[in-house]
Image (cartoon, rainbow, N blue to C red):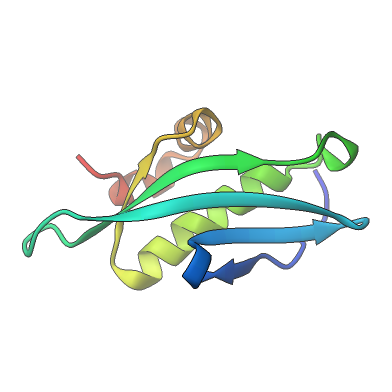
Length: 100
């Protein structure tokens, strides 16, 4: 695994991204309004890491940053992309944020 890199949030694009070696990795999401009682749900749609910088844990850093963002905003999370679904099975300490 690589050293953590800075993950940037572009809320207007509902996107988290990072840059390494001139390449950009991203995570995209959208928000659902689950009603007054449930609040908002962050649906993680996609994670993408270029092959040139793959294999260094960058997708995991993006997903963790998304969960941290959701926690800070009081949102629940629905990991719709396959990578995020696998990530949460490996990091059950974040299960309290999963949308039911």
